[in-house]
Image 1: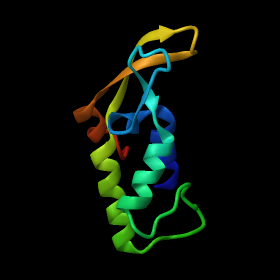
Image 2: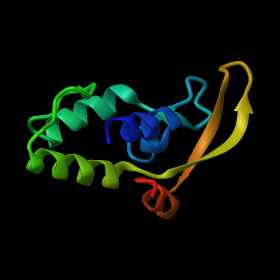
Image 3: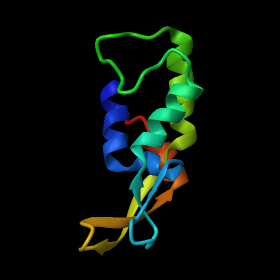
Length: 104
């Protein structure tokens, strides 16, 4: 689960709820990792960010973590490329994000 969450963070999927804005004001461009971490630690007591892969949280903490992730995920859709900032502008498909949150 740790690796899956990291993978979804890296893909920008949690930008659906924790949106990073382009510095030029051109719209969303990914995930605000700092906001993600702060909200995670506030909403899921007993969890620290980054997650520790050597520590297994209590079942209730894991369930809260799963709920947190489900509320925050959307499948990233890449828009136009911003060559000066070296990123894509993004939008998110909520239903597709939920469907692919935990691969089968």
